[in-house]
Image (cartoon, rainbow over all chains, first blue to last red; front, side, top):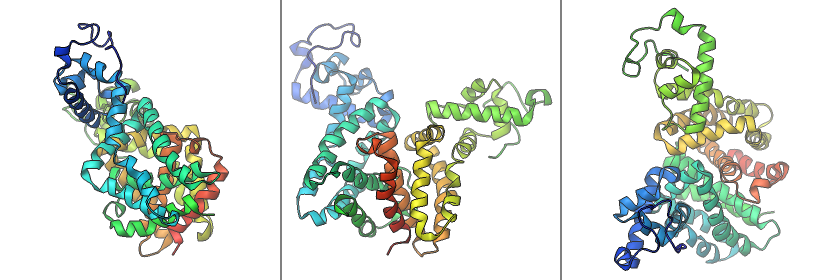
Length: 211
Length: 211
């Protein structure tokens, strides 16, 4: 979510220095426009095949503006997935919002809910595809889930091996997302959500707070 | 693992009909050479970006020979991942080789073992990357794990919802593979294998044979 000061000269050789007031136009609107284009480009082509030039073209702006608002391609990606990841980052609320012995079910319902909704599933798929395919994207993804999601869960648990517990619980849910929504293996892909919650919530709870 | 009769004319316009004896040379050796090149090309570039022409070039043969031995790009991919997947297809042995109440630990040890070994991890990573990124690759992967792996486990269990049980158990192991070996989230990425087996085997057992 950082905005670098000056645009990269290498990526935009024809414009040097800070874009003029005319170029930047209506700042917040232009920024949103670039972010939306970035999200679509990363979703469609993945991290490796997306370029700052391509994002600029899709947003209808000069590449220098993309650098002006976001900095490098890595920084545009991080900004784009932070927005796309916003629903997933509400998971801490799902963690905190009730007693600890119901946290497994709340987290399971939350994750399945984010994946069941096509609006939130599409950006998540884009993130997973990029992270599986590219080390830079994986590093950004890793940092986001570690600091914002798993770190929060671990903090709430207050157990000595809380981080590993959070990750094993996450692994059960990540695996279900992979097989049900990405690879689409049957009968899991068509299984009833409530049936899955009944089967999976106790496992997630066990990882988080079990013996 | 099928070999199409005649090479595709579209892909190899300069050579029509069955390759001559001279062209096919030492059949089995040439076939292995193509298969090895295919595995490397798919590993490096993923399914979408790999072409029959590229595989032929890497193997030092005419594209018509690739079509001759394997058929379409889909069929080359299936043959290549069937070989790469061969260690994983030994999982049925891990399932069968002992009492049912130890199947969770045997399967967990088996999956972690395949991923811990760099020689078997590389082709698995290539398959996961291709399957996440491409629908055709996902379909082939889906068919392989459904028929060869999960179907076998389900058959051994002999329970009414055995297939879903096998998939939920697989999901726990797939998620650990994703977070530990692909995304490499800590502390899971560096956790001791025996500690993981102690935590995960009971979960896998529970999915497979629990209440």
